[in-house]
Image 1 (cartoon, rainbow, N blue to C red):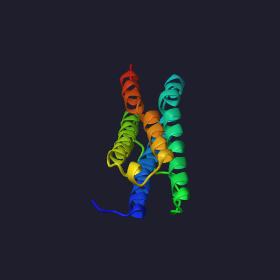
Image 2 (cartoon, helix red, strand yellow):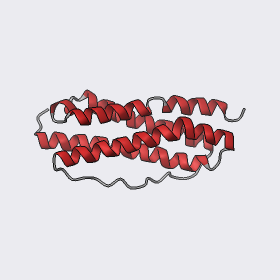
Image 3 (tube, one colour):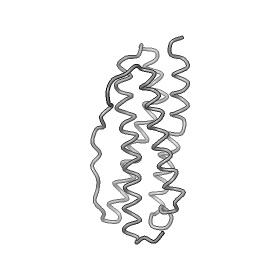
Image 4 (cartoon, one colour):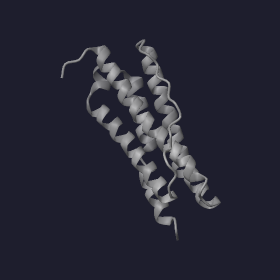
Length: 151
């Protein structure tokens, strides 16, 4: 595939933005789910899902903005995501896990494409890696929470 440095960098921003949107959706859905949980479950969700997601979302948005600024590319605004129609808590947690996995898959594909090496920089690569490290346990944490619900 042939591309210019500018088009490669724009592809990085588009892919990182899509992953950030998925994390934003996961956070929005999680916010709705949180309201339907008992106090003990809500505390557990906050500890093992919300905090890592929030940290990863912030990390990815910062990585995106700093990369765009370094190469004088347009900085994207990230708007609050729509959690969709309310459903039961189990379905919400499944959606959080799916959205988080989708974000991780998008970032993995971006890293595998070698664009971050070819037209990116060390700060970008580090930010993408930190984001993936933060979200890596989230799908399994959601699965664990789902097993505990209804006990």
